[in-house]
Structure formats: C-alpha cells, structure tokens
Image 1: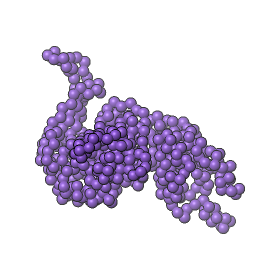
Image 2: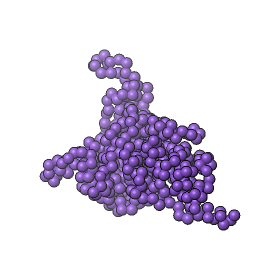
Image 3: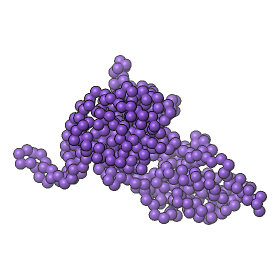
Image 4: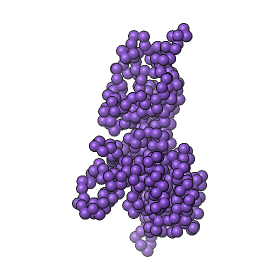
Amino acid sequence: MKIVVVGDVLLDVDIDGEATRLCPDAPVPVVDVSNVRRRAGGAGLVARMLAGDGHSVTLLTVLADDDAALHLERALEGITVVAGASGAPTPVKTRVRAEGHSVVRFDEGCASPPPPVVSPAMLHALKRAAVIVVADYGRGLASNVELRAVLAELAGRIPIVWDPHRAGAPPVPGVAVVTPNLAEARTFARSFALAAGKAEGDGGPEALARALREQWQSNAVMVTMGSHGAMLVHDEGQPGLAIPAPKTTVTDPCGAGDRLAASLAVHLMEGHTLDVAAVVAVREAASFLRHGGVGGMAGEPKPVKLHGRYTDALALARNVREAGGIVVATGGCFDLLHAGHTRALAAARSLGDCLIVCLNSDDSVRRIKGPERPILNQGDRTELLLALEFVDAVMVFDEDTPEACLAALQPDLWVKGGDYDVTQLPETALVESWGGRCTTVPYHPSRSTTDLADALSRVS
C-alpha cells in the first residue's frame, strides 16, 4: 500500500570535524572539517525514513531551481517525488559540529514564502494514498487551498497524520491525529486564546491536547514531550493516555518528531488502533534517538536481532527492553495448533521486536476446558510453538489467568484475538499500570481447536 508524504523539504547539511584550538584573531573554535553530509530534511526526511523501512512512498512537495535543489534530488533518489515549483530558494540548514557537539547552525532561504501552486499531478498522487503524513515545515505548501480541499475530503476515508509547525497552516478537520510537541502546543493554545479574547487556560499536556483537538476538529491530538513521552487525547469524556518514553541517552534529538509521525502512519495503515500505534511510535522514536537520530541513519535502527529460541522468557523481555525494543506477549492454550493460531501469532509478532507466548499449563487447561483436555501436553505444545519463526519464547503458567505471568514480563503490548473485547479483559488494567497497552489482531472464524478435535474424532 502507498504512503504519501506531503510537505516542505529542506536541505540539511552536517559539517563534522574536530576543534582542538582557537582562532588567533577571535576567541572562537577552529573546526578542522573531516566530513560534509547533505541530506533531505523536513518532509524529505520523513519520506527517507519510510523508504528506508521498506515502504512504498510518494513525496508530494515543491522544489526550487537552484544548486541546493540538485543536492536534494540526489538525497531523495529511490523515492517517488511528485513536485511542483516552489517559487522560492531552497531552505538550507547547516550545522557545524565538533566531536559530535553542535557549534553553530546557519539558516539560508528560510523566510516563509507565499503558498506555492499545486499541480494536477500532485493532487492525483494524493488521491491514491492509503495513509498520508503531512509534514508542515511552515513553507506554505500545507496552506494551498486546492491541496487542503483534497486532504479534507480524504480525512474521512483514510488515516492522516499531521505534524504541525508554528508558522504553518492548521490541520484540516477530521485528520486521524495531530502531533505537536509541548512547546508548539502551548504556542497554538496561546494564539487561539488571544484570538478569542480569552485568558490562557491550564497549560498541562492533557488540557492542551483537549483544547487543540476541539479547535482543530481532529479525531485526536498527541502532544509529545521528549523524554517524558506523550499525551494522547481522542475520546470525549475519556481520560487521556499518558505514554511513557523508554529511558535512553540522546546525543542528537533531531528527527524524533519525524520518526514518530512516520511510525504512526505505518501502524495506522496496518489497521492497528490509535492507542497501540501511539505506544509503538513513542518506543520507535526513542529507539531512533538511541541509535544517534539522523546522524545515525546510515545505521538506522533495525528490529532487535534474536539468536535462537529463548528458554528464559524473562531474560528475553529484559534484553529486548534494554536494547530499546518492543516486547509483545500473547496467551492461550494453543492445543492442536491450527491456521487461526499461526495467523494471529504472526500478526502479534509484527507489532514489536519479540513475541512471548504465555501458555496455560496442563492443569490450567483442564480446569478451563474440562478433563478431556489438553489433547497435547504442555511440553509438546511448547515445542510446537517454538518451532514457529515468529515465536521467540514461551512462558508456562499454572493459574487460570495470565496476570501473574504478565506482572513478571511487563510487556509493552498484550495481544488477543479479535473475538475479545480488550476493555473487558481482567488483565487490561494490569497491563496499563506500567504503560503497556492491550490490542487485538484479526480473528479467523471457523478455525478452532474444538472444531478440529471434533473432526478428528469422526475420522477415528
């Protein structure tokens, strides 16, 4: 499926080197340049991230006719770019860094131009999207009337993630989620309050998100707060969802918001709920920063690599979490493994970096299913599950519910089949107590262990 990124592109230039002495005619460091790197910024960075993850991406933007635009075109090789004329110089942001620390930044051509013209080809490409990311960097593209009309029409049909800018255009009504950072949220709320002649209200993240959601008429607002995670508000009368961020050492925060918006779009396109998409996106943004941010994109963080099958599920969960990965768990009896099981397990594994199956013991199955069950003992069931490439560990529990098992594992995501209502699960409150979320994967009817056992009894 096609992801379309809409927005302003910038040319980011990183000049790296060493500073071992001061300039003789002024008390400033002399940087001996060792490397100059040019890359796409703004909406171009979002598109580059998604393409690097293997997704089919189209970038809708405007480009200038200058040398910087030629560098941008090279940086965007391999990405489908549908571009109009910007009518303004390419904005260039140049960072000078010594031993990885920023010394100074130069901005060129960054004054806000009038809204550019949008071509029919750009509008046609937009209508073919399965999900859209609007990366507004205040250069005017998101203000174009024709573009906004098409976005407003599509907002009711496909997910749109809108990453706003203080100098940019407001989101069109009905977008799936708007993702301001805390400073931006306060600026927007202050502007709305002044325009309405009102005093500024409570500036807490949840209150800000609610006020902005009402003002923008969006389905949700997700206020990001750096190392403090994010606050997601999307249901009237329901408390906001506070999403903690994994602890990480950040050397370069650049690109975290772009990574989060890109991740949200992918997980919404795949059909996950906004709550789950938001939790996963926060963790993926943290992992991106842990691996150096944009400076580390040559070695973009990949899914955590697992070697062999773990017999110690607790050790696996700890190792994946420490590496910045996402721990996914699911549970059940898994007696007579069938296609419905394997499809659900594969879908669950796709949500994170490891999948741990919490497996009912033989005694537990007998209490739940009756004295004739299980058909296969727990040793055989464990062996069959571990033979599946998408199962990384199995943890057997003897209780009637997996709550003790979950309390020990503390997974980021607890996954059940679509025939369950996660709001009614007894373990939901427990999982949410440490910042985890419960979600479902598609249920496949007419595939069940009971039906399979009945069919086998007739054959015998």
